[in-house]
Amino acid sequence: MKKQDRNWTDSVAEKIARTSNKVQTGFANGMSRLTGNVSAGRLKIMLFIFCVGVGGYCVYIFGDALFSSKVTSTIHIQKLVVPKHATQAGDENLLSNQYVDEPTYQQIIAFKRYMDSLKVAKHPLYDSLSRARPGLLDSVQILIEAYEQFK
Image (tube, rainbow, N blue to C red; front, side, top):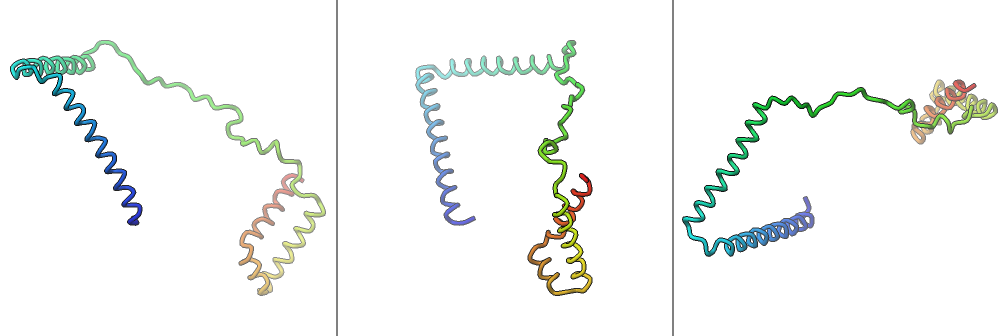
């Protein structure tokens, strides 16, 4: 991590820590004002009543979960309904019947033959074209297949 990033994160952490300390101090001061005039004996009794109340409620919740005779299932298994056209992107409606017209198709075939002849002859032009345009022959093949599919 860069020094600039560390400084930024350190300043954010310091602000969070300062805010947390202010909230804690405010809560402590408020509780001190509320209980400042109460004797230690009464505070112990209030703490005991609070602990018994909260503990009893926890025991009740735990016991109800274990020994309840009501059988309620929160999980319901239902058949998944898949819309009819969920697997289709909608592109099929945008495409025409042919990607490529006949004259263009013939030019693509002629170019493919030319590239194949360069490949067989191990001509340096083939290497430079394949390096400059790595997906060119793949695109040509896709166009040929698309034309033949919609022919």
